[in-house]
Length: 296
Image 1 (cartoon, rainbow, N blue to C red):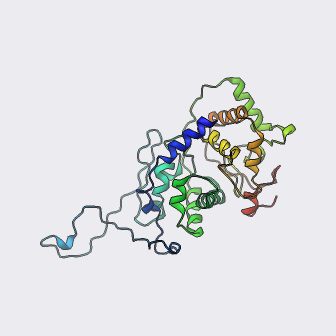
Image 2 (image 1 turned 30 degrees about the horizontal axis):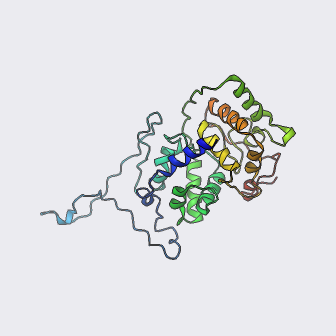
Image 3 (image 1 turned 30 degrees about the vertical axis):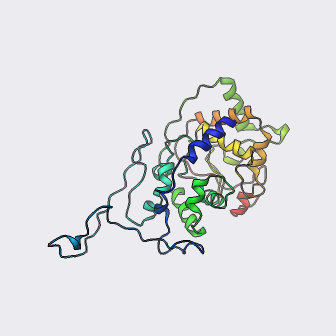
């Protein structure tokens, strides 16, 4: 477990935020950064190094309409064309800093530790952005990207990704024993009631696509990502809104159980981007559901 978490941290912290911050910058319609920050520069549509038409001999200085490059389709198999290029200033163009890691339209990052965020409940995504900005989810590159962004802008980003419905890439096979997969399925479908561990499907839905308004789906995630997140809850690196139901559940599970659940979820056929399950009573009280307006 410690090796997995260490690898996750090393791989993720190697990212450079310097080249991606401008893509997330607030547009003029957004509130100015907090006191002490610098005003956001406007987005330029002139390619770097291009000559100014007014300085070219014979140029009349007339305004030239910028050419709009249509968005390129994502290719999740080899990681190419992952940053959509849309109308300059559009939200699709401004979330390029997100799609550099999470893939075009949030389909899934090329690295196993960058999860699919497309189609997740908007309130779940919004709450995660708030947690990253506040440092309750500990990942420095995300915090630096979000620290100057307003609540309203973060909600706009969350809604955009929740509306994306790209097809799932096929699940990758894992070299694990049938006994481990059997143990994982038992916990996912039935839990361990003697230790007050509810079944995963009780909150995430029988189809594991999540529950409105703020419980995420578990399909299309990698074994490495699920294991790392469960470990982050166990060791207090990840926190949710109190009461933090997932933190409480994860700390009741053994390392072997975490590995079994992660493996079983990762090898399941993700199917199609089904509808998220309607809100329903959960076996444990989850603060993120309360915070998002659900009655429990």
